[in-house]
Length: 341
Image (cartoon, rainbow, N blue to C red; front, side, top):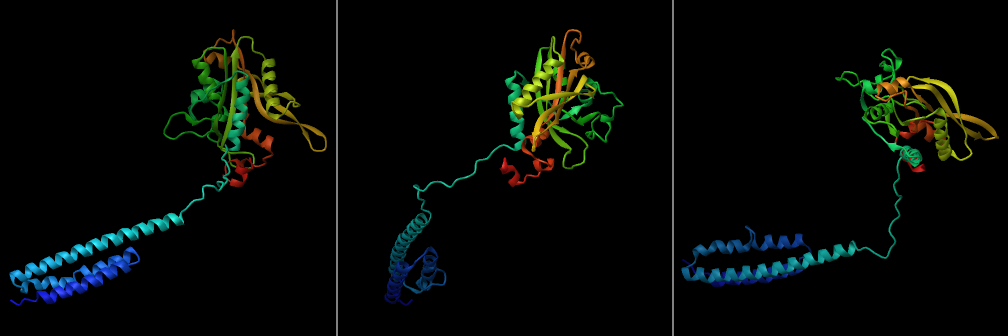
């Protein structure tokens, strides 16, 4: 075996000097990694030196092994130090680029707000709650017995036909409620008078969509049952509601009408002043005294108790109050419309 330790040692000394210089000059982690591959990779001069150890004598292998270990220790220490320096410099540059001036005022963001229909519904409920009503709710998929039967709607009534009512597939006599009146029936079958509830919620009809009709709309209905309740109580309640919502100068009028679950029944108009000094009336709701048959079917003695009920379309009130001419604007999610209110 030849002993070329001095020559290999000189090679390692040269590689050490070149490697340490290259490590010091590396400007980023990628360049530093290239230095590692160049000086310690499988195709580096260091690898060639390691391969020639088999040609050395035992004493030569021992001496070259010590030189190789010294080279790797010095290389690894310099590499780790430079890697830490580059990482620290990168972090400092990132912190500098992402620096925040905490003395600057924050960017102003427009606060969110409830949808116009939600605002109007809450205003209406606040008025009735202030009068002593309690809020009641019920299911939107409703049994026909509550949606029709207990409300005195006969089996052959047109409202039961599919051209007006949406039936739920797979269920016998289950509909998407056509009004919130089923909740009134549920209340009367589970509570004894005195009763004073107001019922908000979505309702469904098989209507085509146009400027004034939608298959989905919202209502607020009210029910009062007690001893000695009269039409005068109904008128006083609706007058107070109309003035609270539309202004203290408003008046209301009741026109005879027909609803299966009230007798007598009335359409209710509220007064308004149009441009040019013209005075007029706008219909806002339907109402009436609860039919004695409805009271009896719900388990309430009609000889002792009487009551009144009314139903108000939330979209109708919102359109009147805010000058909205097309009901579709409530549901199209146009940000310009939503932000206006």
